Image 1 (cartoon, each protein chain N blue to C red):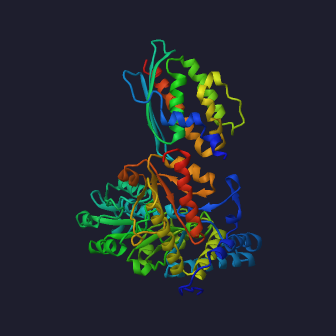
Image 2 (cartoon, chains in turn yellow, purple):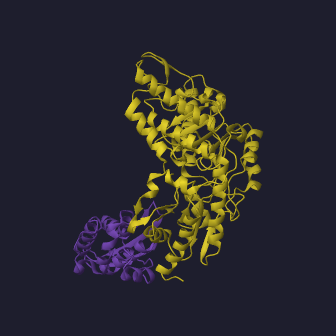
Image 3 (spheres, rainbow over the protein chains, first blue to last red):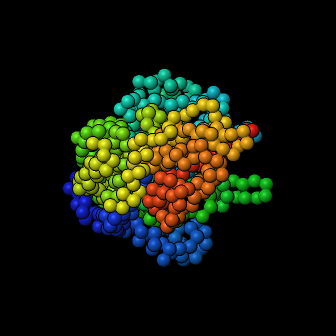
Length: 431
Length: 148
C-alpha cells in the first residue's frame, strides 16, 4: 500500500504540473482557474497515461479469452478493483464497477424493484428487498437529483411512500425532525454524505444509527466525500455507498458501488446479459456472484485502470493532507466572500460542517451573468441549479454560483476568484 | 474585453429597464417555457385578432439572466401590435442569427434592438437564454390560433 498519510505541507505548484490541462489558456488567453471540481475533476498525467497504456499495450476482452493479452487486461482490471477497494477499506468482492454514481444508485433502487416484481411472480427473493404499498423510503431535502429521482421512481412502481428530512436555514439536515420521520415502515434511508451545492456534511453516524434502529437499509451518496476526505466504508455503518470516478481524478465513464457482502448476495441483478451469468439455457439462467453479478456486458476496463492510477496518485499525496488543504481553501473562500459587500453565502459559513464546495449569490445579479464575467477572466465556476432543484426552492432562488476546489487549487486561485467577483460588480455597475 | 461584444450597452439597458413586462388579460394563448440548465422561466401571453393575423397584445413575465431578460424586452418591442407574419419573419431572422456563431449580417429593420444579440451567438451556452422568449411567444401564438 502506498498510503503516506503523514501530515505534510503540500507543494501545490508541483502538483499543478501533474495536470496538463492546467497549463492551457482559455478565453482571452487567460490562465485557467478551475473551480468546478464538484462537477468533474481534472486528470493528472499518470491517469491519462494509464488509460492510454491500456489501449496501446494490453487492449483485449476482460474476463473472456484465454490468450496472453486477455490475461493482462483482466489482471489490470482486477488490480484496479483491488486498489480502489483498498482505498475505502473493503474487499475487492465488495466493489462493483458501474457507468457512474447515478447508475450505482439506480442499481440499488432497481434491485428493490426487481425483487418486488420477482416475488410477485413466485421467484425466491430475500423478503427484506420486497416493498409493499405504504412502506417508506427516506431521503433528505439536500439530495442531488441522482439520489432523489430513482427513489421517486421506485415509489411510483411499488406504492412505497417517499419522505425526506428537511434542511435548516444553514443548509444542514434538521436532525430534530428525523425521529418523527423514521418508523418500522421505513425500509430504505439514502442520504448524501456531502452536499454538492452547499458543501454541508451530513452526520452519517446519527442517520446510520436511526436507520439501524428500525432495520432499514442505509445508503450514502458519497460523490462529494470520497474524493476529498478519508472514507472507511466499515466506519460509516452503511449497507452501500455510491460515488463516481471522474470526480476523484479518474476518467469519465466509470462509477462505483461499495456494499456489504450480505447486500450484494441478496440483491438480484440490475442489468443482465453476458459476463454476469453462471449457466444459461433457453429456459432460464443462473447468475454468478458479486461483483460480476452486477457487471453485465464488456466492462470499461481502460477506465477502471485509469481510476486505479488516480487512487494511487491520491494515496501518494494522502487523503488527510488533501482534506486539510481543502479546509484551508474553504476558509479562504468563505472568509473572502464574507468580506465582499453584496455577496450572500448559502450553506454553513464555518469550516466545521462543510467541504470546499461553496454556493453564493451576488445580490441583484443572475448567476449566469456572474459566471460569464468570471469566464472572461479564465475562472471556471458552475452556475445553475446543480441538479438539486429542491435546494433552490428551499433557498428561494432560481440558481446559484458555485465554486469548488481540489488538490490542484492554490491560494492565488481563490484570490483571483475574489478579485473576479469585484470585477463582476464593476461590470454590471451594481456597486 | 470580448465580453462587451455580448453585453452591449443596449442589452444592459433592456435588462435594467425591461419594456412591456407584466402579464396582461385578456389573452388568447399562453406559453410557459423553462431553461432547465439555469432555471430561467418565462410566461408569454398573446391576444390575436379575430382572423389570427395580427398580434393585438403580447405580454410576459420572466425571471432569469440579463440575456434572457433583455431578449424578452426586445421581443416585446418587435412583436407587440405587429402581424403574425412579421413575427415569423423576425423570429426566423433571430433564430438564424443565434445559430450563426456570430457570422451574420442581421437586418435591423426586422430585428430592431435584437441585432445587439449578435455577440451572444458566439457563446453556445447562452444561445438558449436569448431564444427563450421568442420560442415561448411562438408557442403562445400557435396555442392562440389552435383555440380558435
